[in-house]
Length: 141
Image 1 (cartoon, rainbow, N blue to C red):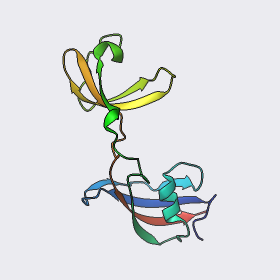
Image 2 (image 1 turned 45 degrees about the horizontal axis):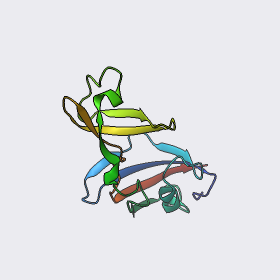
Image 3 (image 1 turned 120 degrees about the vertical axis):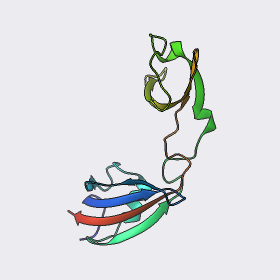
């Protein structure tokens, strides 16, 4: 059976960056329904028409994957803006969940912390990167 819109697909994949560095490898199969928005649209498009047992390697540009890296999404906030307790305990590398004035959630990684402010990066960790996937289709229903 071929991968078509509306099918439930089970697959294994590896993900590498533009330098060939392995970023992720599935331990358990990934299962999703094509067309439901559960994975990147360009990823779905790349596996359309593949059959069970087939393997394929393809590369997505930053625009097809997680978008370009946006320098304006790196900014500094005062500790008071982060938390009522003045941002105590926040460390570089930590993922924060922030809320915009409109009430939307924004995820950002802490880059730097000093005694008055916290520098954060709200870009997706894979923003600005071309990503290469190697996929094996395990089942299609």
